[in-house]
Image (cartoon, rainbow, N blue to C red; front, side, top):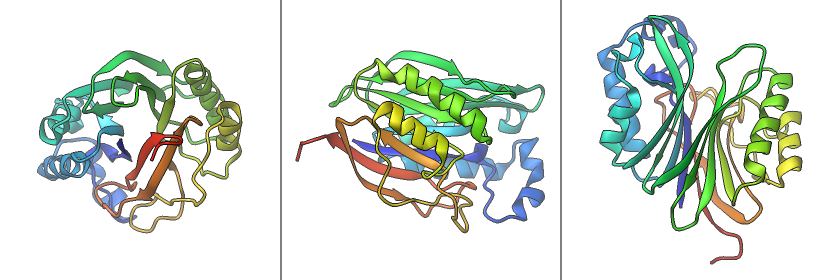
Length: 244
């Protein structure tokens, strides 16, 4: 299976620090540049079997009152989609996570993550593919205390399922205490080498990760040099541990 996780920043397309100011209007309204960005994002994810996207707008004003995942899925060729709405800014945006798959998705769970500020979530599905597994698409808060509580909730949700993957924007590095705690609780292993993904134009922090249960083997783990968001996408392959 070919995997991809990506915080797409709602198609805003920040490619340098000053774009946060110059493109501030894209946080509020839809623009033709966003449409082009969504087309490019769909082209990038098309070859991947399982895709987790964060910071999708699910129908706010800044996306033209249309869910961005509808545009992306129609162009990428993924027949199976699950979405999770996490935060609504009235009249402006509808923030969410999404999973796209070439195989059927079952048992969709909308897990709202704990935190002082609401709006973070983990979307969990069972994938009926060549390797049956549970997949979590998550977007964590910025603070370490909230991340520990949120990852504990994800570990509990994944712990009694089949083999599993957790993919998304963790907002913390592989060497951080919350992520080390999660791996200790679940038996997941981090890649041997940190893979910086943020900011995309000069990656310094490994915030985006793909983690797997012990019976899955991850290979070809890398960040892709695609500058359509302030995060780089992370890709990998998985096989059953012990398979060729």
